[in-house]
Image 1 (cartoon, rainbow, N blue to C red):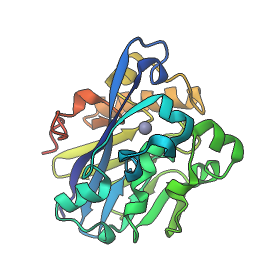
Image 2: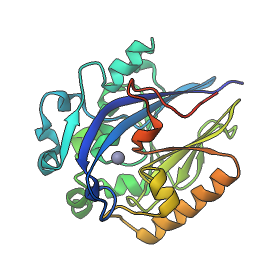
Image 3: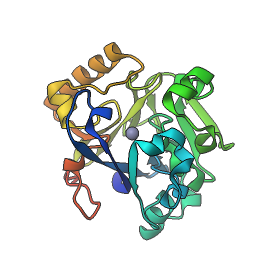
Image 4: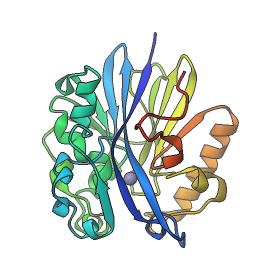
Length: 252
Ligand SMILES: [Zn+2]
């Protein structure tokens, strides 16, 4: 059985570092990753990047548009990235959203036939008026009528341990990460439960969180996983990506 990961960058955001890591000076460039996981029993996308409309108009993200400079060009949207790999977006079986922030769900619209796999508590947060306001959730990004698979905690997607959703609550109410086992070993896509290596090593946390205690516990868990040999791919770590948009972490 062979499982393959194809990483894709679906645009970049540039923003004040202090908005991402508390008290951090300067500015940060953030890659917006999406991953295609090919399993003998189905094709999976983990996180879908930015909505293609953001290539020409930032008003879709409302007041957040003031905080972010968007670098996102035609062809870099999820459907374009898939087409360039010879993959028909209508033949993606599952899309897993780590959480419902705009830079993780924008390409959901590009995957008409995928079943949406999300933590139940994140889906419920996406319907809570207070959390919608605090998180800038835009239901037009994710409430698109896809078949839903709401999960509670760890979920082994194909029942063979190769593609497993890991509850990593804290960044948002129901954030999840993805563990993928390939012939080359174990990879964990942390998404925003750990933005970058500095968070892992120095426990520098964002200036906002649903639960800081939960975030710290998750980062301790990642430290153990890495010591045990897992390779971590962080949510928005420019150092893990090359300028041409390929991942610098060896996957084989
Ligand atoms: Zn993010």
